[in-house]
Amino acid sequence: SNIRLQCANGDSLPMIGLGTWKAKPGEVYEAVKSAIEVGYRHIDCASVYGNEAEIGQAIADQINAGTVSRDELWITSKLWCDSFAAEDIKPALISTLHDLQLEYLDLYLMHWPIPLKKGHGMRTADDFVDPVLLPYPDTWLNMNQLSAEGLVRHYGVSNFTVKKLKVLLENTPFKPAVNQVELHPYLQQADLVNFCQGAGIHLTAYSPLGSSDRPDPLKQAGEPVLLENSVIGEIAKELSASAAQVIIAWLNSQGISTIPKSTHLDRQKQNLDSRHLNLSEEQVNKIAEIDLARRYITGEFWIKDEGFYTLEDIWDE
Ligand code: A2P
Image (cartoon, rainbow, N blue to C red; front, side, top):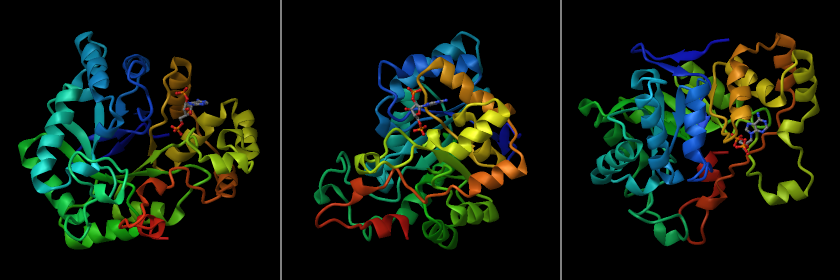
């Protein structure tokens, strides 16, 4: 299968990257260092994960050790929602670049289409900015207009629906290079995938393995665990691969890049080795049938009493 996704300007995005969400400070340095060692060239970061300084040290140490050069790496980070005002975007970017010890990012994503007040978390309705006063298309425009300064190679978004992507495409001259969303065999999102592929927007799948973050009520209700799904298990057996590898190869087979998180060397290797796995058409079709339209990152954390959003607003469904 393909190892990288081509961009119009000749840059290319590695199909399998390392996710760093919930990789704890203290663990993430070793995780990124070993990932680069075993061949990862794409690291997915975000300022809100609170671990970019450690990631930056790991990248710098591997560059200094000669394991890799900066131009072989693809580093993604994300603008957090409290820095969406025009005057806050560049300082947020500079702070991320400082933490990551980088002169530029390969990809900078708007983390969610939801503005928060500067320095505020997502705790109460009072932490939010009225989206009418700070609409995400304005933030998108302002992000893209930083590019002249060479600090960012590509801009994209995360957690955007078809409807919100259309708002950007219809109201701004800038097409996102990437939309990073939750995608896996239990959340296949065929409409979103078709739309993005038709529009030339690359998709990156987060929580590709079904996330350890499944909400507790689902666990208690005996919700099936993606990595234990029997269809995937059978295909894994046929291919002498692991369930995780089948899922990653399935995403890649559709031209979707993915960022499985692991802080364990053996799993990092295993996940990256999915590059060499090819599913048959029959296997792909079997996986198409196990969709549950099940979101694990539900967006509930955006819903506050007296707040601006419902889950319907977030997912447009
Ligand atoms: P760990 O970091 O301990 O390896 P997702 O990217 O979907 O959120 O999934 C990440 C979760 O899946 C983490 O808990 C990670 O644990 C685990 N994981 C990552 N790779 C594999 C693998 N190949 N097999 C089983 N579990 C994995």
